[in-house]
Amino acid sequence: MPNTGGRRTPSILKPGSKAPDFTLKTTPDQTVSLRDFLGRPVVLAFYPSDWSPVCSDQMGLYAQVMPEFKKFNAEILGISVDGIWCHLAFAKDHKLNFPLLSDFEPKGAVSKAYGAYEASVGESGRAIFVIDRKGIIRWSMLSPDGINPGADGILSALEKL
Amino acid sequence: MTQNYKAPRLTLPVGERDHFEGPAGAPVVLVEYGDYQCPYCGAAYPIVKKVQKELGAKLRFVFRNFPLTNMHPQAQWAAETAEAAAAQGKFWEMHDYLYENQPSLGDETFFAKYEGKLKLDLPKLKREVAQHAHSARIEEDYMSGIRSGVNGTPTFFINGLRYDGYPEFGPLVSALGEAQKESGQS
Image (cartoon, rainbow over all chains, first blue to last red; front, side, top):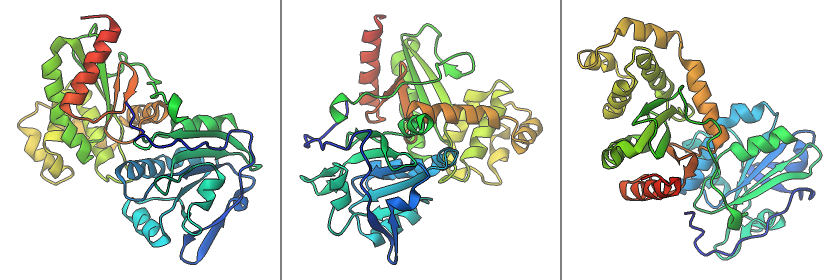
């Protein structure tokens, strides 16, 4: 059975909501904004922590499945509260081929805007949002912390856009 | 939502296309999506063997390919080697050999080492691997895994439902026992 660790369950933004815009660092001197991707589907994958086993598998899987995401011209963005240098090392080690955004300062602000922040532990929950070309959330899910949700839900959501 | 969490189900049912061990009427079917170069699959390999021994005829075990090519440069080659052996009726022999010799995957000596152990038409096997003769089947396995919620390797499904527990003997046997009870067969 999934172990939710007794954490409070965040209440994530639901389909139909406008995806809150944000600007976050993806390298020490580059930022990414959600509005940069208007006209394309975006997958936002909030996750608790670089280097944790489940997050490593989850991000590694997305890198592996990238050719399938590309068939929908979708952009994948990973987001956690880790700092940018941590993201860079994690991405290099796991051969990640999509941006990791640093929700570091003010800590967790974007995660909070999406209802995906787990205040009790100071990390993002494992929440995924599929956002359409106009910036509207079309699918969202919150996976238990210990469970890597896989890519099937994302691909099904992209197909339905 | 977390409270409504349901493990995903296999989208491609187990059938004639699959490589299996154990009887067709077994009350429990364990499907593994695996990568021959993945160290976690290597660690799970003897555990699955032990589980098969424990459950005997109550279990059918199925293996499908899920090569994580982004991380493992030998994974696709190894999967194609297993499938080329399957074309000669030796899938499980090669499957076992690949996992039992995982550290030397891709070495120059790899074929030479197994030549005497497996009765195979080696030139034919090498030719099929070089021509990617079995890549469509591996792609079918892989895509079925992605659409079924495979989230890393190994990923197991028990009677069609993704197993989210630890890939260890005790938890697996316990989950398989539960599935057997639910199936109503003893």
